[in-house]
Length: 254
Image (cartoon, rainbow, N blue to C red; front, side, top):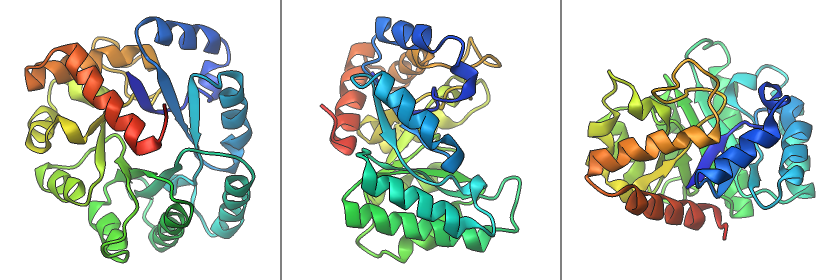
């Protein structure tokens, strides 16, 4: 298994990060991809990746909820780090209009800029979308037939959005929400097929059943794997094989 979206560099893991990594490896998690948030998280992200170089890979980007009127300064910091250090993706980036809509135009500009960087650097993108699929699709249409490759992490749309996203060549990142009682994710992922799916946790958020409400961590991804295997009537080993291969191909990791 590859956890394609995690924040185990965050302070929530400062007391037991080594245990979290060790127990993840013990249950079959091969790698974790760390997704940056903004300039305040860069040092933590880089330090964690350097502590576990064979286990962690990093993505660099500016999260939409960190976008405000001073976004140019944040973008400059992100761009400088992208040129100074090797990252396997740009992320997490995107649009989030759940809590705040006053910076929607700034979010669009930041998203578009980082998508352009991905094309220039030939890197995949990790896209965050919350209450903003129409706006995200509007930005993507700007790139025509030259959208970057990537994944819509923690996918929260419906069947139509899933169909459009996968038609563009993107993957859907699927985590703990798949195990929740009142979700329509099983129907959605069946509609696109297992070949367009990646496993993730978004740790420390969105822990799967039976750990819902607790701090999420990579080892809990086993529960997502189990549920996905049930949905597709496949063995866990087969789902692991397919999603791991997809993650390796998208992010260029061995």
